[in-house]
Length: 333
Image (cartoon, rainbow, N blue to C red):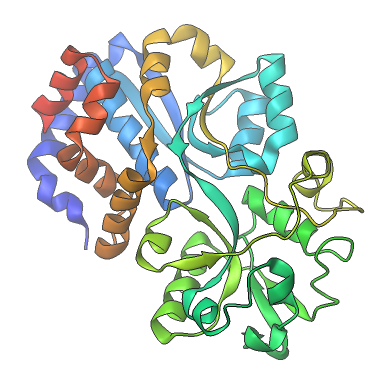
């Protein structure tokens, strides 16, 4: 079901309004990265930049590693609305220090990443508190394709977290092979989410990587595991998150999740008013969790979610804009 049909009048007005204002801002490219919260935010920024600022916006497909690499080497796209810097921490820090990339305000308050097990398994086995506790019991999390081993659901290819998961699974770290666990590439973010939903609904075991806020964890509560060790920043920055071929990753706690809006330096210099908006645009877990649950419940895409947010969260987004800018957006609605 494509819920944008409900907003036909809005879309018509929105489409007609762009040419008359586009000269005020010019062209802007925004990365629409391949997970729900990032898809939602990219589309929200597109609507607000076009309606409130008169920009002509193009959304370009992206993912954490590929988008950052393109911004760093080519200076495009102009904006990565929701960049989880943990997967590219060393390169991101270096790019910011050089002035090639500008890091905006922290976007999501309370965001985090980690390894989770299904809630029903935690309830049946409250002794499973740490990662080592779970790795000692591959029999409780069997891989259906290889029942003698346990299954760990990792990140899809191209996601920054894939590198960290690969390294943490190595012998010098949590040693998946020695514990008879297989790391499974789900193939896509949608497939990873579907594996959680399926396990929850069937009350089956599940062990793997995920992050919050997400509509998935909003609907299907999971138990986040304790790493059992403190965070080692040096090993994380220089090995775990840096290079899938890193030879000596150690057991490590996941770094604190930092989610920012990243901009190229050229865009930042030329667009102070847009930067002002982007730096004001923050929200909490409850807000974005509600939007993501809407997306999940209604099979809504990022564009649908952006219109839903504008219709239902005016008290949030109107604070990011001047009264005149907010009026332009509200007039379109």
